[in-house]
Length: 471
Image (cartoon, rainbow, N blue to C red):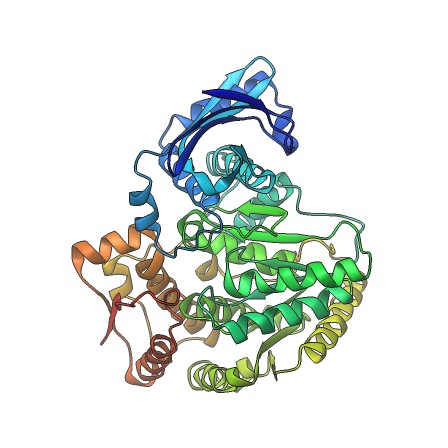
């Protein structure tokens, strides 16, 4: 056992090194450095309650950052002996970490960015979740209550900045993309950075890392300070999409629905790069919201883009949207192929329209309160075999409701592909069975088949075994 002063966090860290894991006691960075005794006691109680398993899995995912693995079950099994405990001391709290991946440390000292992300897990999974989900003030069964809860979780994470012009661009796309597609996301991020726009992504690798990486160069060239690289995730997906090192603000929402709402309420425009089932879920979520009659006049720039060899990918996505949701949905976005500069210019222009609209309607720049999000997009969907079988997949419903049900299809497939509980459910009960009208199921099947053929379901080099059966 050795004891060293942490040069990056200023904390005193006890270190015990083994071959591929390290034990350490880590002091907090950020707002959790100063807590009252009551707040510390709450954190301690929560860490020893039923939330511990969730806290442990999210912490392990953060500590595994950079070791790309898109299988939550495999990660937990690889580090079976990992544990993390909250220690309460007179001067505050510390985290006692045992069996952590050695890659989270440099010369036995935890990397500063990973330390920040680790305490973001503590803040969001234990503190914010306990304050929100156990608080009768927030009625999570209503649209207003859920939206207010998302707001408070984001505010608690200090991600809502007043007095700042709109400039946060959300970038969606797959974690399993080709090198050419990844390089393209960096070029787009670079052009966005040159124009002073900040980046928000799902915080993982691939199309979530590339735009941030490119933007750092653009911001540096323009000598822009205070750059934001916001990563928004949720416990079920964090093991498959561990925060990349560029993320300097990390927020963990309780479930995928609140994560998606956080994206559309904080972002001022969205760019979609090529991806798989998760990207399709995000597209359907946003289009379903924009198709709601109450939202038709709200400006929300949405661009689909990729390199030249992704043209066929977006043609298929465009065709799928037309067949399932109709021409009105197709009019809510534009497709730009192989032109990063045009993407950045169009997005900058779109963000200017958002600013003028928010200014004219007295809406906040930092949180889009005016968007109407129906309960079908807010209610958490548990991807059980029974729920997947009973989805209403037919055209005898409003287009935004069909979009909500189609989103659940892809959400369930993401769970079966990469989430620990989804993978275990498939192993125990067999494949998800997805039923629906042929005019809906045929394009769904064709889209999913194309994702498999293009290796968009798993990281390159990992064989994909379908978790679903189309009926």
